[in-house]
Image (cartoon, rainbow, N blue to C red; front, side, top):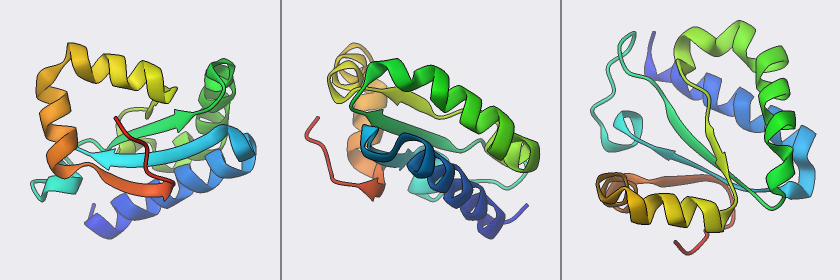
Length: 117
């Protein structure tokens, strides 16, 4: 699978999340190998984090991805996006300095407004 297939999977996931969550979806970031240039088709997974305003929408996110994105793009994505409020994600980054460093260096805003972490 090529990078274009990877970006098609990302666009599909973001589109479905936007339509399902509307104003609760604050932003979506890409991090990991695809964002830092080390992505290997058919081997790498795609790392996304969706920041949401309402922590109760996580079940809605899982259902949207399971029914409308995973059947077509599950082999490409390989893992579901992280879903968190900005405050919860900030706590997670503080507890995981390696992820924080990687996210700071190569995280890419794909949708929404940037959040200060």
